[in-house]
Image 1 (tube, rainbow, N blue to C red):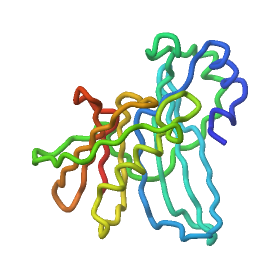
Image 2 (image 1 turned 90 degrees about the vertical axis):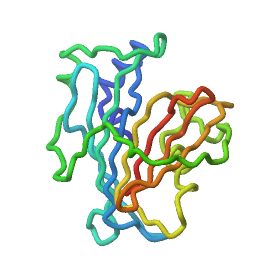
Image 3 (image 1 turned 180 degrees about the horizontal axis):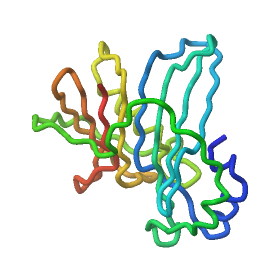
Length: 203
């Protein structure tokens, strides 16, 4: 269940006004990865909401009850007709349940790329199985695609991703990879014109 579904009055307002929330960025701090077959518990909540943006934390807990992955994310309220950000009235924001912000390190939403050469990687096409309910490439699919380009021996402890523009069914995606300082990897997924669908940092 997403946090929008946990807020029925607010979700109904979005539906009535042809609005949706599109993810802008996410940071995930990986304390440990759950093992295959392990039962996990997921908790997600809103810690701030403004006229144009909503912020949430999500935590994955292992069978031992301890957190495995800590995340925070920000999404923008967007009008389906115009594709532009839409202002939410304060009266509607007041209906949202706001909880305390998770105690974790919060890096900037903007990923600053190092000045190092990029490697051009094999392009791939967005498939039907990549598409979400908003008819865009699912947020997780960008990360899955990028992981294929990282060295097999690399283990990420932190992931940051900026979502720039949504890839759609049939779009060609052109990946580029660069290695920054201290073994940090950056992946850019670009469209045919060289504009980014998403930018990721794995550290």
